[in-house]
Each structure stands twice: as structure tokens, then as C-alpha cells.
Length: 553
Ligand SMILES: CCCCCCCCCCCCC/C=C/[C@@H](O)[C@H](COP(=O)(O)O)NC(=O)CCCCC
Ligand SMILES: Nc1ncnc2c1ncn2[C@@H]1O[C@H](COP(=O)(O)OP(=O)(O)O)[C@@H](O)[C@H]1O
Ligand SMILES: [Ca+2]
Image 1 (cartoon, protein in one colour):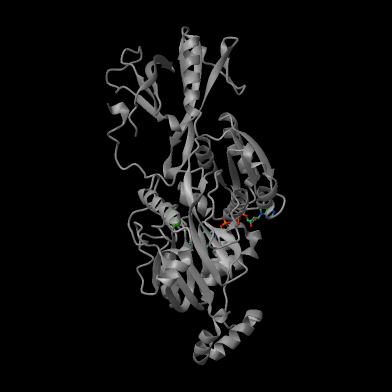
Image 2 (spheres, helix red, strand yellow):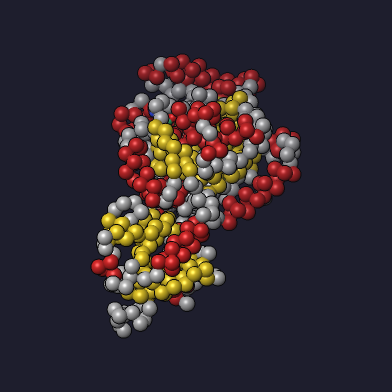
């Protein structure tokens, strides 16, 4: 916890029936019970509370009317009788309170004092401190169709009242069809009017939002969004995610929980978390962006199968997950990748990306220096200097995790040590193995055991990678392979159209943040810290009492 710093204001105020020394600095609001209070008890330790100013949600004056007080929002609150006759003026501070499992809730404390001018001075001083980096106008998109179809209700009941309390104005659009939000952001939205965009939905809905926003930013900055070699311009508007989808992995991996109230509070206090974005191209043609999982094989098949079972809601993933595990398809192809050099951290680290992550800061800085130095073409430079590595094989899954991909199904995620904003993605290759071994790997996503500590798994931290399915390889490659497996190749082509015959298909599809890609051969490049979320990364859970707590001083 921060030290208080220079005091802006200090008064004796009352909380309920007790006198408190209350102080405000740029960083902290502290209220400490005075020992001279009439209700002071010698055997009870003095009570001291402190709240970082950055975690104050709002402050409101309690207005007096007919002997009782009325809140700014119109609800009635009897303060006078409770607090003694000399206490006439009151204000209430709403602030963030931490609960279990990274959840935040809104707590409040009402201060009273006899002097109206003092009271107003407090309210205006606190409001002044809240003025920085907080959103005032937000553009909200709600997907009424995602998850359990509760997006609209979640927003109206849990989020909108908090935005109102915090004095945030909103423009709300309930989407009417897929890609409505994306196209509105691309072509219509008056972005200058807003301080941020809010996405109410799942990972697929978030994907729509970033596609609209990144595209629009590139057009506004004169950057060609189609070119795989262009350095993309970062988006200035932050994005808030109110989880209302099926997996909500982007929210879970950046906040630590899928809880609409917690997300709303991170938006209100104006948190900022940069995020890496991968661009995906096919033959120099832009396909999509991805921030969490790009998965071929197992996760691609689960997604394709589950889309046909949307009526099941989020349970569709469990059904299709089990089905695809039993199907046990493997796919052949070539993966080439450009290892991330000069960075700190590896995918096998014990350290995790947490709030204020120093690895993201260090590597983020390195990436921006690199892109200034080598603006030309990093990829072809490195290709000629032989930095690319190539692996050919049979894979059950090829996954690129640009963040941990933690979610309620797998609380540590697909790549537990991946970072939100280090400019890299973790490329996980699961080679063909027995069902039993694949199950061991999958089960380790849900336990403490290392899912990479298996002979058929390899993981690399990369800046760029390419995948080419075997049947799309060059003629010379194909000639070599034909001798080895010509029969299978012919059958698998046929069997893609006739799955009933029981042969394995030749191709899977890519699961790109929960959306299916139409092409299998792809070129993926990480753009470090391209977007920003209203989040602060997962907070470290307190292990022992913080000795720098100002209340202990
Ligand atoms: C037999 C025990 C198996 C346990 C395996 C658990 C592994 C789960 C890892 C899940 C990683 C999820 C990565 C996130 C993907 C989402 O982007 C995507 C779309 O989300 P949404 O739009 O909110 O629906 N979700 C999925 O692809 C679901 C994958 C589920 C796999 C079982
Ligand atoms: N009004 C709408 N009707 C139908 N589909 C929509 C609508 N709005 C958004 N979508 C699409 O719904 C899909 C799933 O959305 P998402 O919010 O991610 O839910 P889920 O997590 O359940 O997949 C996304 O592909 C998104 O483009
Ligand atoms: Ca990353």
C-alpha cells in the first residue's frame, strides 16, 4: 500500500457515532478513530481505514430535507437522528472493496460534520482528485445472444447503476446481428465523443470490438491494415469487458474473475492494461486479429463442432470437448516460427503475469525500441539470417496463447506463464500421442502439474509463426511425402466430404478467439501492446499484512 504523501486536507469528522481524524492526500483517503471519542473503548484497538484515491468510485453529498437527508440519487437516508444533533452536513464516499477470488465490490462510508463549508470542501477536493484518467463517456455494445443470453439483463441490473453513480454517461447499442458492433465501430461510431468502448458479451463479441477499433485506428492513421508487414498504430480508446459469454477467457485472464460488477469497477476507476494482438494473414491477405487463443486441431475442432450446438449454451464446449477428445484426430503440417530473442521470460517460468508486470514493461520497452530500429522488415531480415525454425509433423493440437488463456474451465490457462503485454505468443505443439497421454496433458490444465512436462509437447515463445497444412505444401515437399503416405492423403481428401466413412480428415480449422477461420495456412505476427483494456492485470493475493500500511504508522 502507498504512503499518504503530502496532505491536501485534514479534519475531524464523524462516522456513525464516533469521531475520526480524516485526511486526504493525492494518493490516500484515511480515516482513523480518535481515542477521545465518547464510544472509545480502552480494550478495543483504534480503527483505521485507508482507501487509495485511485479506488474511490465517487463521492456524493447527502442533502438535508425535513430533518432527514436525501441522497443525490433521490433515495432517503436518515442521518440526523443517528448521528447526533450537532452533525448537520454529510457526504458519502463510495470505494472499491476487495472480496475473495479477485472480486471487487462497492463499499461506502458516510462522514458528517457540523460545518457546511468544510463538508463541501471535502466533496470538491475528493472530486478534483478523481478527475484524472477516468472515463466520462462510454460507448457500450451488448450482445444479447452470447452465453446464456443474459447480456442485456447483466448490463441493466449490475453495470448501468454503477456507471450512473460514478457520473458516467453512456451510449448503448444492443446488437441486432453478428458483426453489427464491428461494422458500427469501423464506419459509423463518432469515436471522438467517447473515452472508451464497453463490450458486454464473450470472447467472440470482444473480437468484433477489436476488429472494428483496430481497423478504424489504422485507417485514421493512414496505415494499411491488410499488409502483414505494416507496424500497426496502437488504439487510444480503452476497452472494458463485461463478461456475458460462454468462456470469457480474455476477461478472466486480465482481471482474475468473470464478474460483471468487478469489471464495471475497473472501468469506473479508469484502469489501463495494454494487450498484445496477433494479426493473422493467409497469402498476404488479412484474415483476423487474435488476443487469446489461436488453436488448430483439438480447439479448432471443438469450436466447429460446438457452433452447431449453440442451443446448449456454454455446456456445448463440454459436450464437443469430450467428443473431440474421443475422436482423437491428428493433423499433418509444417510449423515455422521466429523465436522471441532478447526478452525476459520463458513459457516454463514459475512467475506469472500479474498487475504491474515487470516482464511486460521490460519486453514492451524492448519491442518499441526494436520497431523504431528495424522499421524495414523484421521478418525477411531474420529469414535471411536464418532465425526461423521449422518443425514438420503430426499434431493433435497447435495452440498459440498470447495470454495465459485462463478461464473457469482452466484457472491457470493453456500457457500459465504467458504475458498479456510482452509482445510474444506461446506456441504450444502437441504431437500425435495416445489418447491416454493426451488426456494427461488436458487434465494438467486443471491441476498444479506442468502441462508442458511431457515428451510429446513442446512450447516456444515466439514473435511470429506460420503454419502450412501438409496438403497445401509445395510440390517438392508433396513429392517427398507422397511415397510415405500417398494412400492416406487420397483418402483423407475424400473423407473431408464424407466423414461417415470413419477416416480422419486432412484439415482442422483454426479457433481464433472463439471464431472459426476459413483458411488453414496462416502467417501470424504479434503486435505488442496494440490495444488497452480497462483492467490492471490479475492482482497478487495478499500473503501477509503490508508493513507500509499507513494505518500502522
Ligand atoms: C478432460 C478434461 C479437459 C479439461 C480441458 C480444459 C482446457 C480448457 C482450456 C480452455 C482454453 C480456452 C481458451 C479460450 C477460448 C475462447 O476464446 C473460446 C471462445 O469463447 P467464448 O466466445 O466466450 O465462447 N472458447 C473456446 O474455444 C472453448 C474451448 C473449450 C475447450 C474444452
Ligand atoms: N445480435 C446478435 N445476433 C447474433 N449473433 C451476434 C449478435 N451480436 C453478436 N453476435 C455474435 O455472437 C457470437 C458469440 O458471441 P459471444 O458474445 O462471444 O458469446 P459466446 O461466448 O457465447 O460465444 C459472436 O460471433 C458475435 O459476433
Ligand atoms: Ca503476450
